[in-house]
Length: 304
Image 1 (cartoon, rainbow, N blue to C red):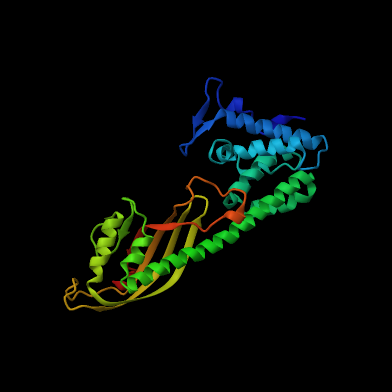
Image 2: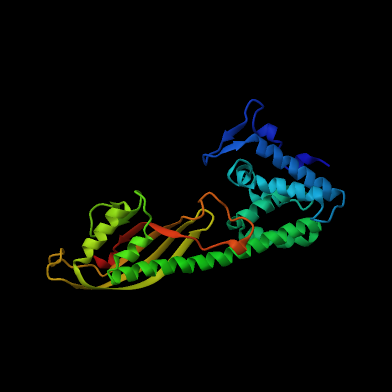
């Protein structure tokens, strides 16, 4: 068998006198990771060619487990920059080349595009039972990921509405609980000329602003949520309609208050490091501890 069809030899990618290289995304990519992946793919392919069909076979398990251990490096490093996932799955006769890509897609299910999903469904029944099992696992992980994604979107919407109710009730405790306690946290509102940075400053500003109102009522519509579950970042967009009763000594001094604002709220998940992928074991996965780190409001054109 010609193993050169599995991948380019790592020795040709990184010169002999180099241990690795820094990629465009700032990752130091070790040459050893490439060499190990190349070796694992060859071992896996050789076992398939020998007719091994049991995924519990010790040598198969060794190749898979060794590769799974370095999948993080594969995902952020050089190989998947040079060779997109689709290329690894392109040749049905090269199941060794498929194995690293399938393990990567299991850890990073957000990378499984509809096109790749159709490709897996198309080739699955043509392959060795071992590779079929890896494909089935990959599709299962992706479905679990989609289910968690929808649940998390609902949860982010719930947190946003909790914040809105905190504004309506002038409950600074609820609002305080949702902000990330970091200097880079930022509130941008049209009623203030500069960004308000830092949780303490944001809470103080919000509490002072409450003193202008007898009553605040919000109607929220057009909520959209975008989430990167792998990085633990979410953005919520909404249209906020405001009804107010002002106190006599309010700071607006008779100026009209726009009743609508477009809101962009950014959340970050704290209890899972942003560099950590979703690993095996979805039964232990939690929605996470999400905090607001940026809240930006702007007036739509109709308000002017």
